[in-house]
Amino acid sequence: MSTQLKQEQQQPSTTSRIDRYFQLTALGTSVRTELIAGFTTFLAMAYILFVNPNILGAAGMDTGAVFVATGLVAVVGSLTMGLLANYPIAIAPGMGLNAFFAYSVVIGMGISWQTALSGVLVSGLFFIVLTLSGIRETIVNAIPAPLKMAVAAGIGFFIAFIGLKNAGIVVANEATLVSLGSLGTGTTLLAVFGLVVSALLMARDIKGGIFIGMLLTAIVGMIFGLVPTPTAISDVVSMPPSMSSTFGQAFINFGDVFTLQMLVVILTFFFIDFFDTAGTLVAVARQAGIMKENKVPRASKALLADSTATVAGAIFGTSTATSYVESSAGVAAGGRTGLTAVFAGLFFGLALFFSPLLAVVTAPVTAPALIIVGVLMASALLDIDWKKIEIAVPAFLTIIMMPLTSSIATGIGLGFILYPLMMIAKGKTKEIHPIMYGMLVIFLAYFMFLPHA
Image (cartoon, rainbow, N blue to C red; front, side):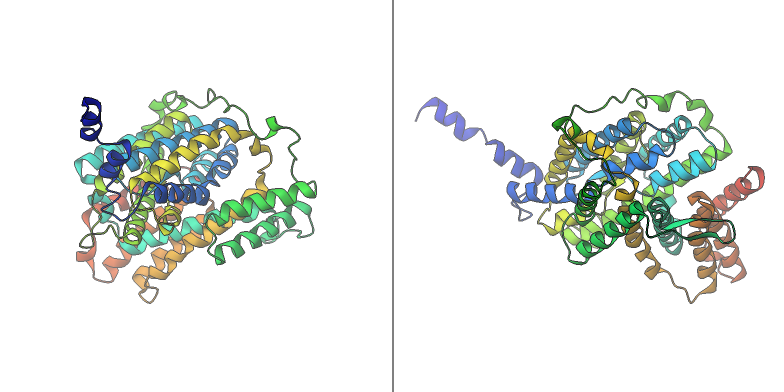
């Protein structure tokens, strides 16, 4: 036997090394299956490439730069999740977190988007420290489950409200504050079409239903002249736009984050992100059969991947990153390991060369995605015990005040104040974690000493 042949037999092939690293055979999957699963996950969450620039653009940020930042965060986050934690979960800037960033922090509080990015950076660094120390899990475990569910549902209503407003389905009204818009308007009709199509695709369990719905809506919009029509290859494919307008801006006003107002902002980023990530980890791990003794193995590594993506996103120029529950679409397609997340990240990298489509994916095209995501998040209402008044009151006000005040922080603050007070009145002081009293004081100071519109 030749020396070369012996060396080839002794050195494992690339495929076998990948198999061992991701435990493909042990988990009953293959590279081909993981590739298909990764592409499925990408399709299921590709809408964020266009929705995120649309939302952050409302805060005055350059949409092209945000598009690139969004894609790069998805690449960095998904690769880190796949390679470090070996989970089939992709990461990208989170829905709800971007809405809070743009509409609550920048537009509502009057904070510059540069300072808001600094807040995202601090929260990301804070995430990393707390994750490595194990404190992060302790803090969030102190928050009662009903409040977690209320926050998730409230953000869903808030996102849906933004989508309805962007679509022109809900408009301002001096007499009633809001009312039904003119459904005869072309762009509003286009958004209604997109909502119906997306809902039907979701009902049929079509993988990537939200993204496909956006694609069909854009095509119909082009046919009727409601959105710009690409006329050349350069209108579809090009080199990624420059990130110079957003890259590193998080460091410009870094010193402005050390205020009570920004503390509340950072805490809100923290709570929302952890709820998203923890919920996604449990849901996807259970679906993939990875859960062991009702615990998520390697959870700390998954949380570290999420935190790293948030820091990278702040530097690139986008809002907080989080794990995507849409990853369950890839798991349904057979994904079981981190190779699914790696492939999803690589597809996001390729998508960076399609930035000209931002001109086609206008507000009426993205609005249905916001509404559908809101519907999905509202399912958290099922896990709240509405028969107990001490739970129902803080949960309800947490939910309703988010869309009514256009502030996620306001909803969270009211819930965190009322819950301990209601539990004390009910004589259930032993069920209140000491950390919740600290949150009570922080949010009381927030409402009492900071100006609110």
